[in-house]
Length: 303
Image (cartoon, rainbow, N blue to C red; front, side, top):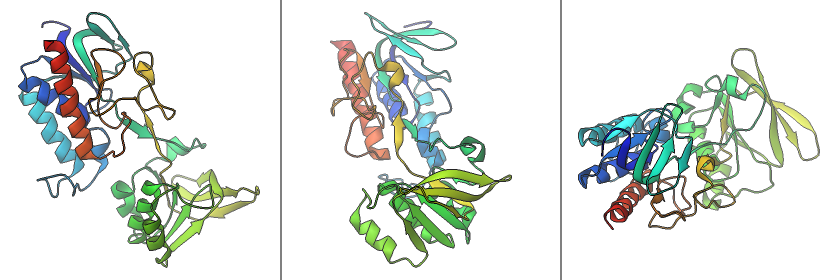
């Protein structure tokens, strides 16, 4: 296809989207990948990938770059434009701020973003004491007091990781028990520098140029100040699906309802990666989704 028309448009250049592009190009389909920011998605923030087959130790940035170069080398076209809307029809039309592109099939691989606390100065202090990735930024707080907020496995694992780096780790949760793995909780209880703060939420960030302390409020309304240099937020993620909600079913958390075949309710539209309903969200499952979604899109086009 020529001009602004393609066989397959992939929305999102994370591991799922770029893998889909590789599989589609190997089937000789023309492919456009649309990405709002930069290629790689969340994985570029991971300093060391240890659980991906073959690549025992590789940075997230290097991994993403290799996948990007592979997709480009096979002939996938990349445009760094945000997909605003998909219009259904015999051809699907994807609208961006710059242009409209059409394709026989579309794969939505938009991933998810970190859920924010919604506090004043939170955005201003991101990178100045506030972080959403302990493994990315933990080393900057060696020997310093930090806090982790959240009650799931990510928060627990972040606290365990930071316990080896920071002088003290406050683990703040709004309930009186954690949703995450009990084994990890027990391991944290054995660490002398981990303090559990139950039934509390972070209600304020105190800073001059960088974070100096946080205000927490318990369920009785009592406020306390904790002197910390770092706050690691692990309160969940928000899938990037709302722009396409008219064409794909979403669950209560906003994830696209799709099984292992990555099909949505709309023929010719597929989802892949962390924005899909699934039990495990890991790098390897994202790339697997990309391969499956591409295969399903190819079958749809060929049928």
